[in-house]
View 1 (cartoon, rainbow over the protein chains, first blue to last red):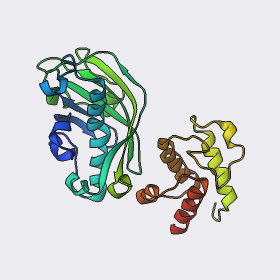
View 2: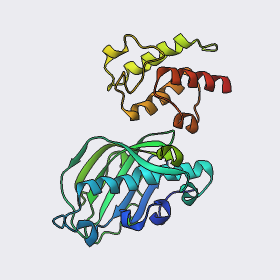
View 3: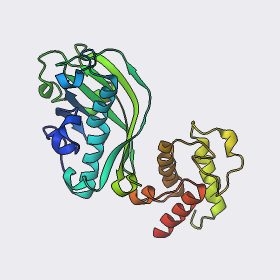
View 4: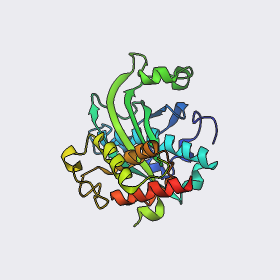
Length: 183
Length: 89
């Protein structure tokens, strides 16, 4: 893989099935620094939960957008292969979740972004810090993040129209060899 | 560091372990090759990767991803890995 993930289909990056995918689009990506990706909860996502997208699903969505996508991209670039080629070899696993603070909530149809920065990546293990923001209705995220950069990422420099939903720290995952995972 | 002795490596590892905030410094007084990072030092699994990364830097070696997959949880395992990586050049 070369370049970055903007415009890349998430279903080709996340190898689990569609019912567990909480990622719609990549809007900005700097391979060694971080990423911005979005998701809009569906009826199924909020079913039996007061019409609200669960906090644990926010963490999962953030992890899919950051440690899984960022780590898979870097591993594919290193091995000069496609995500599909890693499917039988590795299982992406949560290793730990640090502090998570929830400040707001998300309902069906609320588009949110996961904005994450890499704090550690080595030996197929990645940690990210970041935030989740609810996106202003009708905003074109591709256009908004067209000129985003690493300095703005580090400062979470986005418009005050975005609503902070969660702050996440030390979200850590690792691609574990399938044969070791099943031991 | 051209000809590392096992005790030198253990001493270096203890220096690294003193920088890990999740490890109680009192547990680092009698570290031996048999000391287990998880059972004896209560180090979280995430810390083992961080310790390995710091060991690479401290001892001037480079580990392969597969080395870490197969790494055990004792000080001896890490000492052996450092010497293996050093020999690999």
